[in-house]
Each structure stands twice: as C-alpha cells, then as structure tokens.
Length: 303
Image 1 (spheres, one colour):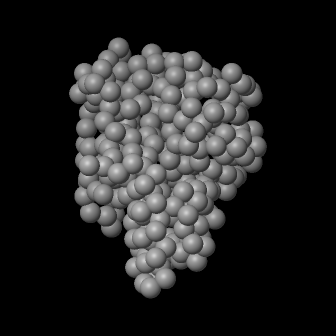
Image 2 (image 1 turned 60 degrees about the horizontal axis):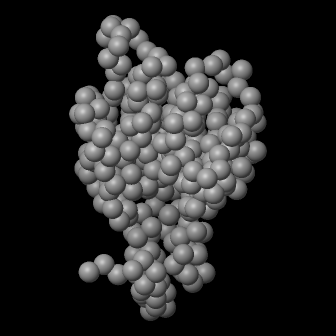
Image 3 (image 1 turned 90 degrees about the vertical axis):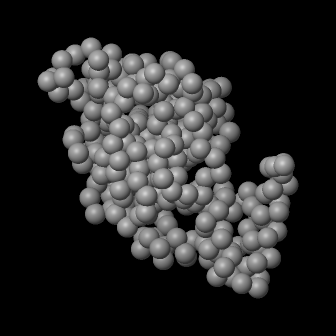
C-alpha cells in the first residue's frame, strides 16, 4: 500500500532532518540521492505506439556512467532519403520520455524537419536509477554531435538541461543548436534545489550540505547551473513558452529567463498548466511556424 503523498513527504522530511543531526554526511548523501532519483517512468500514450515503433533506435553510453541510453530518430516518410533535412531535437521532462512529446513529430515533419531525441538516464527505455543535469546535458550534446541540430525543443527539466548543454556547463564541448525552445522550464538547478528543500522542510544546515555535495561531485558552482547564465552571449535564438498557471514551475521562472536574455521571445499561455502546454496544438503550431522563419523575423508574442 502506497502512503499518501503528504504523509510520505513528512516521513522523508523527519528522517533526513533527524539523520542529519547524528550523521550529517550520510544525510546529505541520502538527500541528494532522493533529489536525483525519479519515482516513476511515465510511458508514451498508447495512441503513439505505431509512430514510436517506426523510430530508428540506437544505444549510447555516457562517459563515466554505467548503463546505456536510448536515442531516437524519425525521418520524414514523405521525402526521398537522400534529401538532407534540418534536425530538431526533442528533450523531455522529469519522469517523462521522448515518446510523450510525440505530438510534435508529424507537424515538424510537415514543416520540413526530421526529429531526434534521447531518453535521459533513468527515464523511458534508458538504463539507470538516477539523473543529474550534467548527465542529461551530456546526453544531448553527444546526440547532437552526430549531425547538425537546427533546434532543440525542451520541456521542463529537459529545457533547462538543453540550455546548460548549449552553454557547455560542466561539459567539454557545447551542444551546437541555432534555436532553443524552452517550454515550462525552470530557470536554474539552484531554484529546483530550493523548492526541493522547501517541500521537504530540510534544515538549513542540511540544505547547505546538499549544495556542497553537488559542487564537490560536479566541480561546478551551483549558481552556474542557470539557463540565463549558460546562454549569455550565445548565438542561439531562444523562445520561452510558459503558462501563467503552471503548477510545478512558476511562470516567474519563464518570465525571468526570457527577460534576462537579449532578444529572447516570451510566448505566454493561460490555463494549460505545466504538462499540457507541451502538447497543446496551438503551442505546437506556433513554435513550428517560428522555427520555419528566419531568425531575424521573430518578434514577441503572447496568447
């Protein structure tokens, strides 16, 4: 029998805060493990089964990490295979998978793009039990190094990690992409850790120990895991899509990110929430249309 979410959070909170008083090192490691471990793997919708079955799948191994991740490529069935079409990479969110963004594939094909993606470690069909921002950013960079990427469409955590990948945060090389679409994306890992600490009511000392552990493991200051800082000075054109009623990542995150970047566009929706905004037909049409236009012609919009 599964405990109600509120009760489970209370139990975890009490356990971590109590453990930190007697064994702080063990507590910080356990707190970080919980932070990096998804609790479920949301599968694609059954209606997308035939489309997903047509994907070209390959396995990819991240350096220094056990297990393999699964990559996908959907080439348009409507053109000769010899024709080179620009690539769009789809990046899913936390506890999701590429297949849950399948609504984008047909519109992108119709607009002249082929589509690629990767199930992040511990997500979808990829192996693993934990995921960090660097892991995901590295997976995107490795996939994008195979052939040129015209654009990345990233939802939620996938959007943040796409920005970090373009900015080469914690990586040896950046993901090269002309355009970046960030849908319901948190502005930084730092903001995520603060929300995590608030949800679990972690003691300040434990929170600071978790931050220190992240920095020890990555060799990167936590404040650098920031989408705006990662994209500052980059030639990538950025479109931020965020809903005013997002129940998981506050609209202020998208607003702050868009205003922090020169020439970034903010596309605002209301009433779609955190997940539906990435599957809404009007949002998909707008974004795909923007990807078809010359970069200089993009202008601010709202809906």
